[in-house]
Amino acid sequence: MNVTQDEIVDRQATLNIEVGAESLEEHMARAYQSLVGRVAVPGFRKGKAPRQIFERAFGRDRLIEEALETMVPQVVQEAIDETELEAAGTPRIEVIERDPSPKIKAIVPLTPTVELGDYNAIRFEDKPDVITDEQVEESLARIREGNATWEPKEGAAELDDMAVLEKMTATADDKEFISSENVEYVIFAEATYPVPGFSTEVVGMAAGDSKEFSLIIPDDYPNPDAAGKTALFSISVSEVKKKILPELDDEFANGIAEGFETLEELKAKIATDLETEVKNFFTRQIEDKAVDAVVENSKVEIPPITIEHESEHVLSEQQQQLTRFNMSLQDYMTGIGKSPDEIVADARETAKTRLIRALVVEELANAESVEVSEEDLRAEINLMKQSATSPADRAQYETDRARESISTMLKRRSALTRLVEIATQDQTEPEAKAPAKPMKKAPAKKATAKSGAASKKKTPAKKKPKSSPTK
Image 1 (tube, one colour):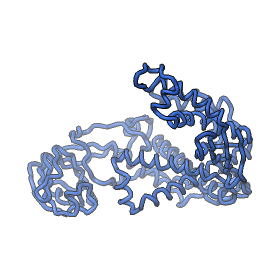
Image 2: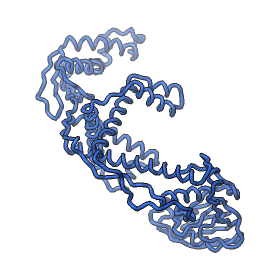
Image 3: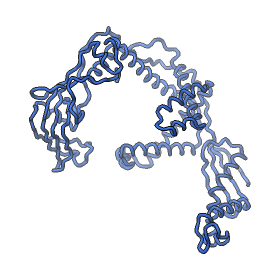
Image 4: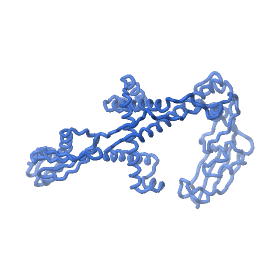
């Protein structure tokens, strides 16, 4: 085998490989042994036809193609080893000549290079917000709303009431596109379900009332048969209910999921959870900004082949996501107004950005001499195993490949933590956006969620469902 190497360009090495005829013959002999046992030759049992007969029946090219399937990867790897290249990824291979002495061109992606800038000089003045008493009261009000019950009400339905729609139908151009029964409909002024203006029509109806009315369906309505058309709605109300909010007292605090002795303990827990959320969000923001700053000041060179491979992963992930939403790629492109070439170009940019950020963080971990202890690795593996649904799934986390991947993830996580420390080390105590006020009991605010069909089952009155403090 003769190997020559062209000049390295863009972290890619081009190898020109010429394989001797004797080497091709060896692989063709193996190819014959493999094929003769799988392919039926007229007049012979499988595996018994002589090679000359086999070649006469199927052609020499059939043996060559089979031989190249095993020979090419082998000789390319041997050429990489011989030239001592730091290969990082799958080479792009082209067979220039096949017979009698195969010639192969292999473009080998090399390990990307990263030259970090002065990341120790990065500083941000951002500070996490301080949780105010008003925010605690707002969260408490949401918990209270979540524990509300519904009781039958005499008279007409008003805003914030619930109307049980015994029947609800809608037709457009004589085609029915809505047909539901026993829908518990919460009435909000700005409701958009099933269409804007529907909730206004329900206001004023009492148990036993029926009504027909027309509404214009929005152009972006999911059902194309109804979108943009005037629809005729028909509804009948079997019951009207009013919302009953629980008293904000120690009994209420004790009745939720975690159970607290006093209302003040519940408020303290809410404040702690909100502070954790704010700090986590702040940390993620600083991480992104800091990595962007490091990337901007660093020099990274990645082989184009590596970027192409990563862009294929991006496109595959995109396709999987579209499949989950039952959307075709063509519909997606039409919706965002982009051509296939533009989609591919976007995927390439996403891939390049993703690779650069990952490489910079990895190099940062090396610069900071980040190490992962066996104890930390074991703890992370055990944590991941908890989400596994079978022994086989749990076992996969113990493979060498999985352990290496998890170790890399932990190194990057530690590197990001260190980067945040560097970027925020000159900060003083965070200041609140607004001065905190003394905690006091506040009346619950009305829910601002959009109206919709809550359930087809009726809600029992005066029942306290459990809920988490900050959910």
